Length: 390
Ligand SMILES: Cc1ncc(COP(=O)(O)O)c(C=O)c1O
Image (cartoon, rainbow, N blue to C red; front, side, top):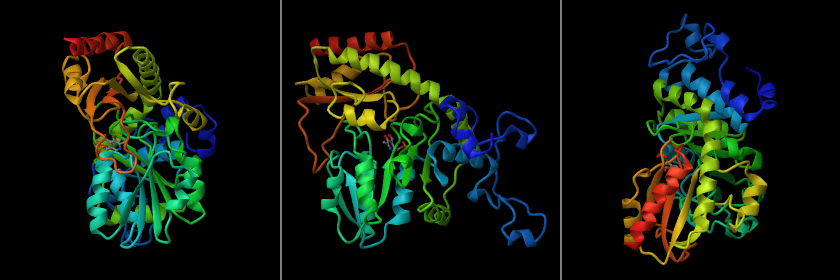
């Protein structure tokens, strides 16, 4: 499939299976070739300068990264996408692309902690004024705007506590002042939230998670609308960022099955979240797809689905007790990241927050629900509850 319009009429699984690459372009092979490249040869000296050749040097893309970026552009509805070596780089590159000394940038307080660290260190060192806002700020974000506000950075749902942001209200307000809206959209993926359709200018993904899907690749993608694409591309090239053909190939390979993996993650995570909601040791289940979640209506309005990561509050328990809980688990691994096929648990710390501090009444554990049988994961979580009582 080649035409964007045509692709957009198909269902999401058809598009995930075919977007980005036409087998006829490479001898009929179903998958694109893995191109490992630095030097690209030109047929003559003229074509080295006249822009007639599509690929010019390894750092500027290959047919493998091109296939991946085309697939992502079709999913995101973006003008262009760049690939970077990690999800964190997908956060830092657009911020470096659009912020200048003297600019003011607003970050949601519930942001992925390394994003906060980048803002508080490198951005501040470069003379950017960094300010945090609470995750439930919608159109009221206007009250925080200054003459020098350049970027509003969002992440929805929130890292670790899963508050949902009113992205359309933020984008509408920001655009009245030409402020750029960026979103770390890793949790939902473009399958469950088409960020650009809701007014976001730059959609950021840690493709390390669901797109790659197997906990063996570090990768980030940044997709921009027409307005922001030229500057994003220019910065990406200027910084000399690129990815290996092997990794790009693996991410595209992962995306072919991402839709059905997400469906399984979603279903198992909800089954387990509902079971946890009724457990006497649980204070709260922080999952926006649960009807009782305070942001459920907002999530339902904007999102097409939920992925498999959420948190639980162990009522009245300390972090030390939460560590006892996770130490007793045998199927859930203890590790960072998420989006792979395997379940993970981590005791989270939200003490970094400054303007949206909240006492959840107990320790918080983040769960990534993998592709295992949910009943086995429930058996495993029961080991954790038993350890709390011992
Ligand atoms: C919301 C979010 N954004 C970005 C990242 C960074 O991704 P990576 O681990 O590929 O640097 C993570 C990693 O956990 C994340 O949770």
